[in-house]
Image 1 (cartoon, rainbow, N blue to C red):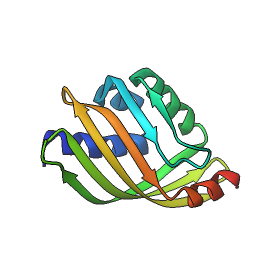
Image 2: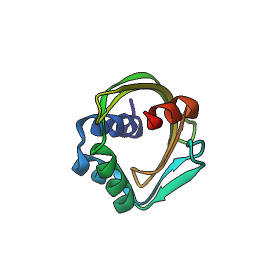
Image 3: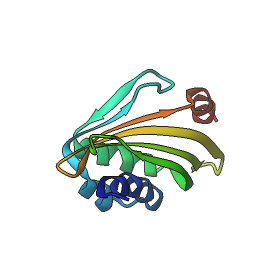
Image 4: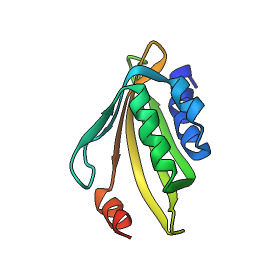
Length: 130
């Protein structure tokens, strides 16, 4: 497994651990966290500090139980990785949420510059309403 593949998967581990320092260290300062099919419409978070702040806030109301890594694909240019995984989360009310995810991860200077996350937005919308 290459360094970028390890880093892409480490991001998921850091989310599960709520490891803010780890997240900060693997993101490029100009990174973008993108949700093209979010229930309320597409949006993105720009800049490492804003990404860390958004995730820290998310940690206050949801916890990752675990991720089942299905596959990691290194692209030909070696600066892109495609991830497939299932996510198991719990909200502050103790309610469970499971979804299927795919993510395109782009690297610059060995750090994540783009994490474009795809998931079933209908499942997510139902969970957000609980």
